Amino acid sequence: MQLIEPDFSRRLNISLRARVTLIVVITPEEERAVSQIREVCETWDPPRQCIAWDSVDGFSVIAGTKNFPSQSRDPLTALDDIVKTSDDAVIILKDFHEYWNNPQVKRRIRNFSQAFRYNRRTIMIVTPTPRVPDEIRDEAVIIHFPPPNATELSDDLDTLIATSGIPCSLSPGGREKIIQAALGMTLNQARRAFSKAIVTRGTLDDQDIDAIIADKKDILNASDALEFYSYTETPENVGGLLVLKEWLGLRERAFTQEARDFGLPAPKGIALIGIPGTGKSLTAKMIADIWHLPLLRLDVGALFGSLVGESEERTRRALALAETISPCILWVDEIEKAFAFGSGDAGTSQRVFAHLLTWMQDKTSPCFVVATANNIAALPPELLRKGRFDEIFFLDLPTREERREIFTVHLRKRKCIPAEFDLDTLARESEGYVGAEIEQTIIDAMYRAFNEKMRRVTTDDILSCMQAQVPLSVSQRETVAALRAWLAEGRAQSASRTAPARAPINGKTIALETFANGHP
Image 1 (spheres, one colour):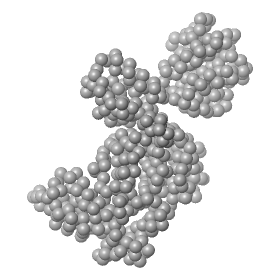
Image 2 (cartoon, rainbow, N blue to C red; image 1 turned 90 degrees about the vertical axis):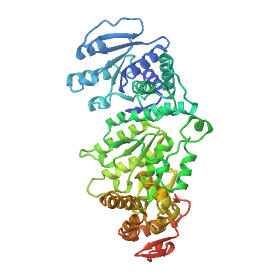
Image 3 (tube, helix red, strand yellow; image 1 turned 135 degrees about the horizontal axis):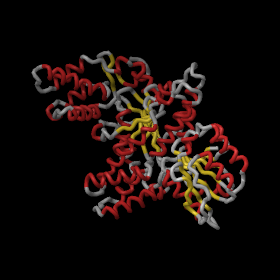
Image 4 (cartoon, rainbow, N blue to C red; image 1 turned 90 degrees about the horizontal axis):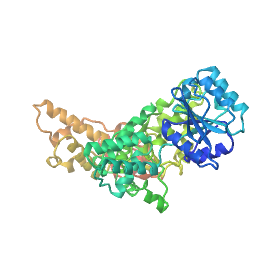
């Protein structure tokens, strides 16, 4: 039986009162787990004896007054000594996962669990690894020890500030965001992140939030399916999409205690559907920057393994790790390709997809999902229904004003001065181009200027490169038409303030209502 219980002390208390004989606590935080186990034993009336064992120091009493009669450092002998004693006690075995491969150790643990069921002797194995032998798994209650909560982290931060004597100018909102940034870390990891921020700048203020978030990257080493993205895109680097930006701005404080006290739930996520190159992936990175939350990209291809049940287990581990790091942004890119149902995988993709859907529906952790898709025809209806996403946004071909803004963004990014270009002409002549295509025309123009004695790029260079490029709205006009018809049916909200009125097809300007109906 496997339990994930945020209130570890409560779960442990219930298990001890139920006289469970074998409990496996999975955590890398041995010291913190042992401390909470000791506190639970000391709150009993009368207090419960608590003894710890490891292969170096043998047995040591950490709660209670009785001495344990044995000092054996051999695991088999230690288990024999536990069986022989008549004392009611909680015995904590440290690093016992090192002996999982010993058949005698496993047999001895099973004998203990079966022979002393419902008495008041309990073995607790504290281990950092989730691998528990099948022979023992059915005999044990498995509890995942949760990482420190906001209160524990806040208390530890107060202690660190008091002992270091450094000036602290954190605003109330900044302090809450620093605590949020540390959520998901172990207490030692959080303490190191706080200390590094203090040592680097000699103070602690709101500017240290991003540095602490960056330290979360090391946690992701435990999962090949999750990739950490550093902040690289600000709202100023994303042209247009005003409706989407306003929606995000209204929810910037959604993960704060203030929002919870107001009664607001944490937002679940959004689906970004639309034409390739319109900035869906860019938007995921922008959200992380606006909300100052870590951005995790779920590599669904890395979820699938060759062994039976391996894919499902990898999916569970990746999502559990995302919840541990929350609040965070979980970005699932091109979700329609990742979960394309195949006939030759014995139903693995369906099971993985079903697990993701269930998690998205039932999750209570502040893990905001951003799912992007280009092909809505490949998406099952159950993915886009209400309850899994707060909103579905459609990213259309950019309007003239948005194209002007996109040109400005990319020219500035390429160290060009936007004021030196005829932005109105560029915006007018680029009708039907998506943001990625606009960026490429600027890069092509820069290559041309670079090879002509590194002269300055001009508006004519960009216009010339634009004429040589075939935009997606022409080369894939049927696909684009189908996507826009889907929006016209009211199935999603446009991410832009207004939709473009016309689009060029084969050199001619065609009204979009004609284009959407498939009659170019």
